[in-house]
Amino acid sequence: MMLLAVAVLAFASTILAQQPIAFRNADTDSYLNRIHAGDIVDIRVVGNLDYDWRGGLTPEGFLDGFEKVPKQIYARCRTEDEIAKEISQELAAILRNPQTEVRILDRSNRTPAILSGAIASPTRFQLKRPAHLNELVAAAGGITDRASGDIMISRSEGLSCIGSSSSAGRPVTNYTIRIADLIAGREDANPIIVSGDLVVISEASPVFLVGAVGTQGRIDHRPELTVSRAVDSAGGLTKNAVPNKVSIFRRENGSTLMLSVDLTRIRSNQSEDIVLRPYDIVDVPFKGKPPRKLPPVFETESVYGDGRAKLPLKLID
Image (cartoon, rainbow, N blue to C red; front, side, top):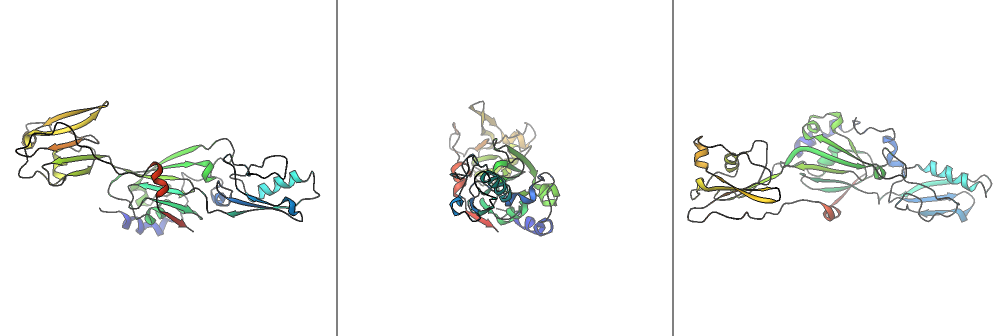
């Protein structure tokens, strides 16, 4: 399988420091220093050991089990100084001039960014510094030739701490980037990827060829892909093929249609060359064998659902 890794690596060093336009937010430069879900927070009140505390966050974003002050302290996507100031204000009712110190003790459990789809090695990334899309693509081995041309990025603002820092839900923003723009070095096509981002290199939908063709199996669907072109892409007909009894199995409205095709008439311009649709199955029968009446079953490869948790994890430090 041919990869585009060389092209990606070639331009990676030249545009790595660019700041993407579409993803620019007021707090982009400081999001890593805000408290994320999964962080361990250490709180110390100078001269008052009884008020020291260490722990994580609740699913809602509050300090989990911090009961040194009457109110719950919301911490997700806030800075250490912001939380220290609020705790000092609450403690002022019972302590004289309390001095509170807050620091993020452990960032290793932050939600990883995931890169999957038409990529050589689908990977989870633990991000400890800003990393651009092109750097992660290169680290995952490059884009494969199954890519359809688009990259889709889904970002939950509550996980990344870019955008909204309120406790009211986690809005998700979706972005689409053209691979051609990324390779061309366009500034807005090379965003910073942050914790919790889901990056999917869209794969071209498949078309399957079976029977008396040079290479059976999957080819990628492209616009205006016809049955004759698909057969040629699969190595052409074998010498024991029956070209006038080709079948196309097509899913439509929950049922399977079978279209009969005469490749001989198509080659001689006596019949229309049918344009294939994604997931069509083209069956070229062998001489001496009856045509297939039911379509074969193909398993498609994907990394979704629980499979994402099993992807290899790389540290970007």
